[in-house]
Length: 179
Ligand code: CO
Image (tube, rainbow, N blue to C red; front, top):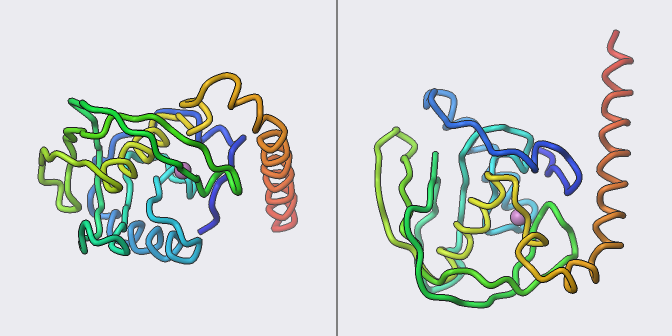
């Protein structure tokens, strides 16, 4: 799957709730392949063009956990504490920003089988979940920094946006040849 980049409207909307869990395993498999290929530790469904509230996370390279996570219809229902950490984003290549977020979150979500759960997360995993939840609500790391910092990456964002629009056009052109 292709990673959708900053500037595409699907990354600016609140994603739809997952209701049909039958089609999910195939999507998740494809998303994990894509994420590992791009060397990401988390990926939201709208980053691969799928308008569903679903995220995958693998932070197993740290000692915190060896689990991989698929979180569906996630919603942060409580948060506390504070931490600052430098984040990158597969949809905004080469931009790294220090983002302030709550250190602890309580997340309501569903598993791949549709079971409802509530868990607390912190550390890198909690941070990755908050980053992906932002994506699923149409929010980027550039929205989480001060106007001054945002100004400093404005040019880079414009470039990515331009490329993203060009890619969109070339995809459309290719499709029109299929006629
Ligand atoms: Co991201």
